[in-house]
Length: 78
Image (cartoon, rainbow, N blue to C red; front, side, top):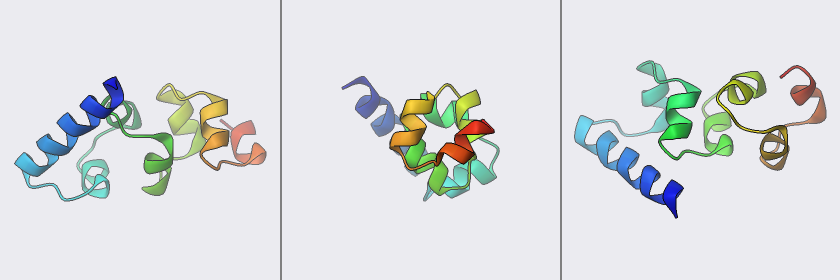
């Protein structure tokens, strides 16, 4: 699957750069869109603090976000 290859590539790059987790990537300035492009899911990005609005801006659909645990109230503001 294409997203699996992207994720593997992103994880390899993380290891190469000495980055241990997604939180470090976010702290170093990666955007939700960049991380999504690297194959990370909305659930993973939510787990490191991205909001529904930020994830919608990164191209995730409302249905994807709802499936990953965002509430209707959170999605209304997105």
